[in-house]
Length: 329
Picture 1 (tube, rainbow, N blue to C red):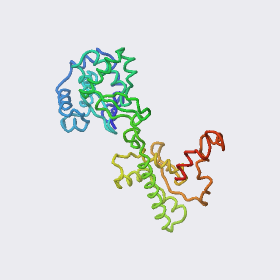
Picture 2 (tube, helix red, strand yellow):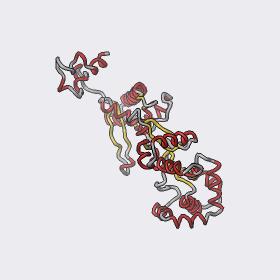
Picture 3 (tube, rainbow, N blue to C red):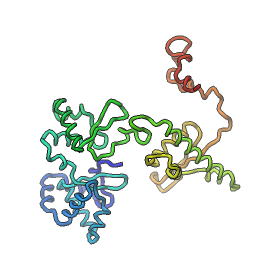
Picture 4 (cartoon, rainbow, N blue to C red):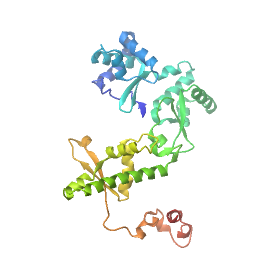
């Protein structure tokens, strides 16, 4: 996933974020930096033109092996301060790309204003009503302008899963945030319940197999318990190797599936002690209940949000209950 990272620390190159902010703080400093662009900066700009989708620090280093790290740091900071390039984050890697606003320089003043408003919204996008409020443009004029910009592939509209009739606008080359698309569990704004159920079954099957293998050992109950545990990373790798998903599922995605198994009482989770909070691993193991649940607790009545209104008369009755109908079928 790719998102704007202009305000993020470059962990590989920039040792001081405050130093970078100091370079970008004033327009006069930016003008001085722009005037001081040298051959290294020009070469980085040429690489950005060669690779419109962006370049990484590795590409810069491979193209200029003779440069030291400090020289690359200074060149990148100069280009950022002069406004020639933007900084994006793609996964765990930082990407440099030619300044996005340069793509809209050929348009009129209104187009530049709208482009800047949409650019500020980032990967969460912005609603047309908010664009209209910030730009003070008429709705007819704004609709025409947005349509033109979409034709130029400067921007794109994305339907939000939170509201099927609500479209948000963002830059064309930005990957929408999961809060907009719904992540891996949504396809064309529809929740993929069958896909989630398949993942649920496969994750539980993996943990069951791990528990059976652990039970076959004779090293004692504690050893069996420890051997039956699997990390979320191991489970994610197993799901990836199965090839049942057309999209790349991250470890947090798999942990959401495992959470549903925890809520169902099929799996338990524990943290493995490490050197710090960030180093703790989430371990999961399949559990077995001592007694099977009775049929009464399996009915939807136990979690019905309107159980206190249910009776044999009125609009909420067992006869017309959608929850019971789906459960019985």
